[in-house]
Length: 225
Length: 150
Image (cartoon, rainbow over all chains, first blue to last red; front, side):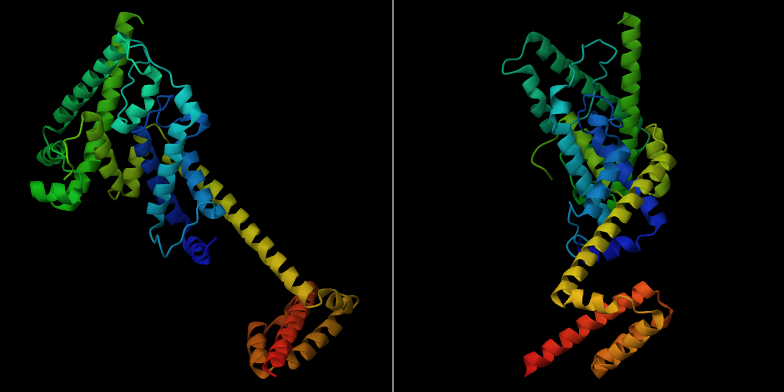
């Protein structure tokens, strides 16, 4: 290990580690929610991995030197560990266990709240499941997925209705403004407040996810599936 | 600004991405984890316990590497000869040998060594033997420097 890294790690107190672990675990959860998991659970991941095992692995890789942290090049350890976590989750999402064994839910089954907010890239990567030509069933499923996402967006807008800053930030993001500085300039909101608004938006998004899951489970029960 | 308006899925990803880049207080992190059904205190305790194991393993690995380097150095400087000379020496003889070895160092090295090991009389017999080995290395290094200068 880089002697400077060793020194820097030795200087971190237990309390600082605790705060760092909490931040990394929350980050892991946030990234995990945006990936597709065959477990359909952002906490209990394929291969027996969990949010805390991912955080532990990231730290272990730095301590063992498998990921060579150089404080001169990357002074922010939290950011460096977040990159390691990104890499671990990305590999896990693309692992055979996650991809090959991913279950395709029946549209109205109890499992169907297959509403996951994976990126468009992730969605295309999973397209092998349906092969080159899409069956009418697949097309229907895709339409249902799109309808589900539109419903989620409606609910999110509803959740944000009473908070003008949230609506402004959401509107700017929908218009294609991606960087906080651009959103700030476009809407005249301080960058700090853009970040704060995104934290609140993320929390509301999770509330929407849970609401949709409940709606689907209730619908499945009504249909006796 | 990016080139095109994002689809709903991409919009949600961007929200989460920006949220993850924001600064969260430890309390906000705890709350977010708890809302996802994760006990933040139990999680922290588990990861911290693993961290301590990694730290010990890293230290042990560092010690092993240092020990291997030291052994290699001693081999180069006639470790066998020194070790044999030290066998059977009692504590008084070890202390006497160290004082003699220190006296044989150059003035500059002697001064540094004495400052670094000012309480060597309190060291264990094993540590005194290690000191004698180190002093032999220092003597050899100084001699080779002198030889190089000539």
